[in-house]
Image (cartoon, rainbow, N blue to C red; front, side, top):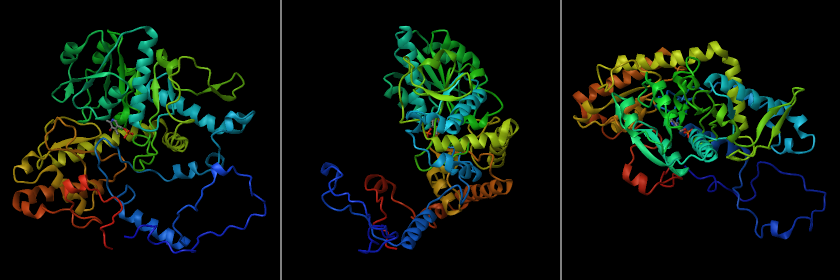
Length: 484
Ligand SMILES: *Cc1c(COP(=O)(O)O)cnc(C)c1O
């Protein structure tokens, strides 16, 4: 496929602007002007439409097929939320408007969205207040660890270490390390963190713990309150990685489990688009004793009910992102929460858990299930049995691509060898789950009867079987060797 620059024809245009009748000569400082014209591809509107439509067709997206990528909660993004985000009153706002004299009165609707999302997420998670600023879950984690640091600094605590279970998502230790903490890994017992192991690691240097429950094995920790109580006994703080909230939303709340800080991935639980690395949103909630450290600004409600932005917050950790976060994403999640309501959110988690258990029990006869108990929103198999026949988890993932499904997460969590982590979400129909189960069974049977047939997949995708080492060392990001 040609690059858009290669399709350029000098003089071809999609839009022709009328010549300006304003004399601009000398009005723009020469330091701000280019010496040479910008190199832009010259194309007709139809050329551009076809180019990007073809690119989109080469992509594998949720709108095309099932995407059971464990821990990522790839649920359907309902289109009514797009319509709300495109209302001109929201879409055409300028982010500096509230900072102009009187400007806040022109953005009361936008401020109300931020304020009400703070109230809704606080209620859903059992927290006192939320910031909408962080731009992703991992960014929320970093914000959360910075809040921990601000709390300990303010109290004069000397703390050096953050405890993290061995099943954690890689972003947890990364966030703790970037914020300047030492990371100590706590081993799991029967797939979950146990009280004894935490006891052994606990001392006055512990700033806090980062946990998710259910964890990345999809298992809920029944001792969770004991664990958070232990952390509080050394004035540590408990951080809830809310990426797995889809398993419990509406059913139980991190605040009631004893957590002090939580991030929520709006692009997971609240159905906003993931969009290849952004824009996402990772709002962070805190309990009352951490409220003053939240990033600037926060939306404040005056006695007359009018909303304004409060920048006078001396203990705040400051800005973690420009302006107010990914406002358009917060708005979509707001529309989603209001549309579903309390009853709807409870059904989200119930059906997400039901779908995961359905897949787990249907595939259990064919794949090794290392932790055989009721799972939450995702189930984790091991391809050990198939690997002994020469078919590892990576090959199963690629064989699924040929059968029209996105692969599950593989080789994570790290504590399961040949891991395959399947998260169906609540938005898939039983027919889709059954088709996926049939494909997984067919692959398991081929691994027994004819493992050779699974080699060389994928064959039907736009880019077929890749040399994994070369793809990592010499990535061909622009499809330059693709001759089509
Ligand atoms: C997705 C995920 C994260 C990181 O969230 P991003 O929005 O991708 O940065 C953290 N922890 C867990 C368990 C996750 O699944």
